[in-house]
Length: 148
Image (cartoon, rainbow, N blue to C red; front, side, top):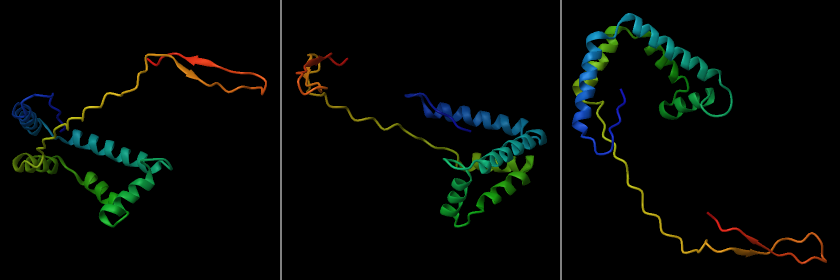
């Protein structure tokens, strides 16, 4: 579950709404149909991911990420096994552990941007530019419109 509070919003209020939503989820879900649908979605995601060649986010990225973080380029296969082995009871248990331990609670604050200095250039007047001449016998001159 991902929540984003509006700037200035009370985080306790948002957290309470998230807890209520989680409790509602645990009462009605997960059921076999929902778990199977999610397994199909995640399996399809992996299939599309490993079919992609070149660029960003393809098979090479998946293998490199596994190798970098776990030392095993095939670590994604363990994730697939966990997805396929998921049951409504295991999903509910994982949700309960997360809601009881509070491991799902994060507070992220936006860092204020530094103020930008005001440029000291005066861009309201026309600038005289030397235009390139196409002939050695011509003299060229011109002006440029002010920048808006």
